[in-house]
Image (cartoon, rainbow, N blue to C red):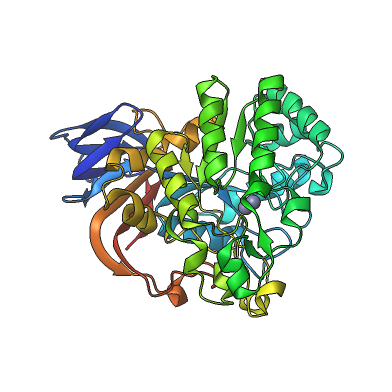
Length: 426
Ligand SMILES: [Zn+2]
Ligand SMILES: [Zn+2]
């Protein structure tokens, strides 16, 4: 394999706290060196990154790739292409496929399909319970041996506290984190959007913030009881952010992720009855949006994850109440994070890079998220100021459900490198 040298970019590696203009040399698919005025072997490919940021490859720890079972919405191949176009070099698909990824056969199928068709790394997340039905624990150890890196019943919560306790005990013995979609289904009671003035105004059934909060509270207590590593998926409410901060202050192994849409949109931004604004958790109040941004700033939130959830037009083009929950996320994540966090001065670029790299890598225990010599050369090159407009019709995803179509961004991905190969370039 030819070597590649990335010249003159601003190299940010949160893992080693490196931040400066430098070259990155990649040889045989791994990082060979980071430094100034590096000499490259003759015939090396050269990437001029002047004016750009060179970071470890971005990791999206929460996506839905829909394969096996829902290939009309997305496949591992198309989802991976959308990931690469979003600057991601690794994605972690949730297990709510058909069949559910609750055993080693399905895990192996995903790993093998990704190996043949995906341009980025795919690290599957196995189910917590059989069929994600919340009753009987799935074969956690065998899924881990087949390549699963965490467990979650995402799409659904684990409603039964005793089942969650046993799942945490089991995951702890296998050294895996437990990720929960925190929602008390009795409290959310078939709601369609956040419960508040806006839901009353639109005449839609509400999902209270408390439906998330009570489960985050329960799980933090169980994480303390079991000593498990516990991760809150798509945190969206202010009380949940406070409780995660509380758990961290107690020294518990509790982490959380936020989606770009929960950082950028509130219930008041919903275009009436437009299903591209329908997701779980729902877009919360402006107060909650401010709280999750503050959580990113103060460290209660560890990672940005997209919850990329493709649905074909036929499913999303129905009355709001009938539509499935979820929106695309991979291609707009970096642009939104820059717009909501970096440009207003809430955080600097090193912190932003951390949220996309070392943050998720640490939670999942991945040998990624760094530019340390010897590590597989996954690199994301991005601009913090290039103007571009998101054109949904050009998305690499098979689906078209996004509220950001036509949105003008300042800054976004420029090139995505996986194991030393450029897999996408704008
Ligand atoms: Zn979820
Ligand atoms: Zn999800």
